[in-house]
Length: 183
Image (cartoon, rainbow, N blue to C red; front, side, top):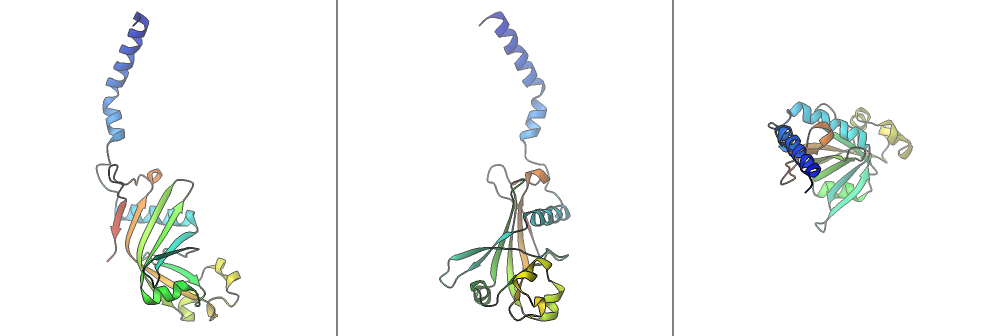
C-alpha cells in the first residue's frame, strides 16, 4: 500500500468512525410506533392517491377472488364503500362469506394499505345516495336510486400500512407492516 493509499484509508476510517452514531441511527428501527391518528391519516392519503384498489372475496370453492374497484372513503369511521352490479360474483361471495380484503397500492411511493374487513351489501336508495361517488355514475345511469347498483360497505377489522415516505416502515427483519385494529 502506498503512503497516499494509507492516508486515504485512514481518512475514510476516521470519516466512518466519526459518523458511526449517525449511521447506526439510520439503520435502527424507529423507537416508537406512530400514533393511531398518524397511521389513519397516512392510510387515507395512500388510499386516495392509489385511487383504484384490489377487492378480495372468498369464492364458493374457497379460493380468493380479486378484482380492481374504485372505492369511496374511508369515512370518519374508516368505512369504505364499493359500488357494483348486484349480479356480479362479488355480491354472491360477500353474501356467502362477509370476510373481505381491500388492498390499495400507491405506485409513486411504493406505499400500500391493506384493510381486512367485513363486507355488507347495501341496497337502500337513501343509504346509497349518502355514500355515492360521482365517478360511478357513468356505470349506473340511474345513480344511487337504480336497482342496477348495490353498495358493499367494508367495516374495517384490521389495517396494515407500509409507507417509508410517511415514516411508516414495517419491521426491518420480518417485514411485518404497521398494524392497527378496529373495535
